[in-house]
View 1 (tube, rainbow, N blue to C red):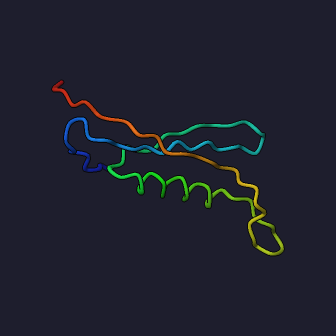
View 2 (tube, one colour):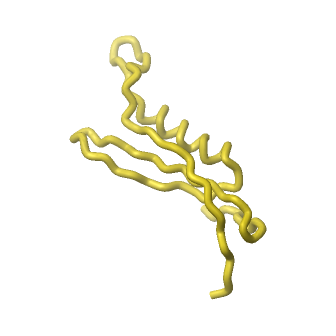
Length: 82
């Protein structure tokens, strides 16, 4: 799905950096974005942390051990004709 990222040149953009711990213990890092606000990127980190959280099968409550973690990076975009 396309996003509208027609922001001004050199305007700050944000991306979510998500590290997922697989069942075999290996880690995979993914990047999502760019987003025009830090809140949108933080929301993606929160989504993946909650979506992949470990739950206790009997109580259905989080165990506090997550299989995903992440942070937000800030950058700028330089637009040029191609």
